[in-house]
Image 1: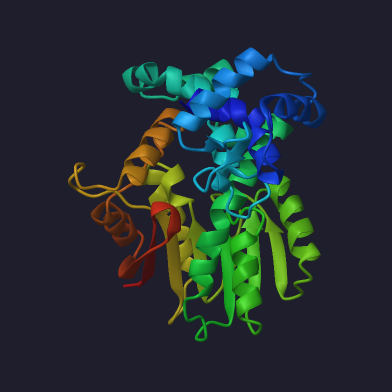
Image 2: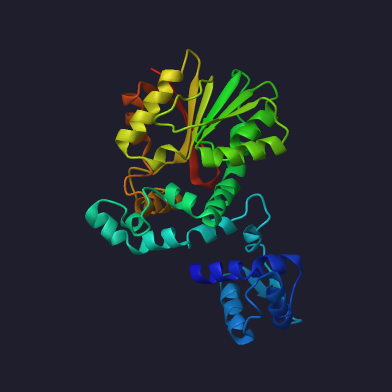
Length: 327
């Protein structure tokens, strides 16, 4: 049914029904006006709507008008926590082909789909396709809002500075600075992402923030009392993950903390949250070496980098917070 969901989003059906209930004829006309796809075939559109009703995303009232249900509302595109970008990104070329070629990735030990597009990583692919890159950034943005709120609710009074390494467009960092006016922030990102981060942070009117461009494995990282790695460590195999963690550990002085946000899987796959296992499979298709880890696995990597987990907590979207200190 993923195909149904993706088609509904591409035809703007979710947003159109969020604006107002519509008959099939009205909906067909609205799709034509909202997209460059022309007026859809109403017989085929009716079958798509039947599938959406089966999924519980749409209902049909006694007047013959389709209405968006409460279960369909999270797919509205302009919500801060919209699930629409997530549904769309997994259907883009590389994501789709990576899933189809998973058996070859497992057999050969490398992400086969990357060779098809002659790129070294999913991020290089996104950089080569700006439209898909923007969609991915939107996907990360919608995931980041609720996580940012959860992190900002933590007590940060003991910190005077924070650095978000690989912090995307700065959603998490911005929320921390907004909730803690005395905090100084630094965002470290690749040049192509840093430009968008500067624009985003500038629009928010945040003065106590600096954006630094660079490669987290090669260039100097910004020191801070609180260091963040949000959805970063899972991108890398153990060797590179330890290298990154060790580089961060070198920055940490007495009282400094590293906060890692990632999905944690359980030692027993049966009891492990579905979200973590599903994300691990996606990492397998795209990176081969990238992975979700157990708490013990991450603890081992941190230990090799001279760090130790001192606290853990649960976050939205099946993510976890791991707080580490030197020792």
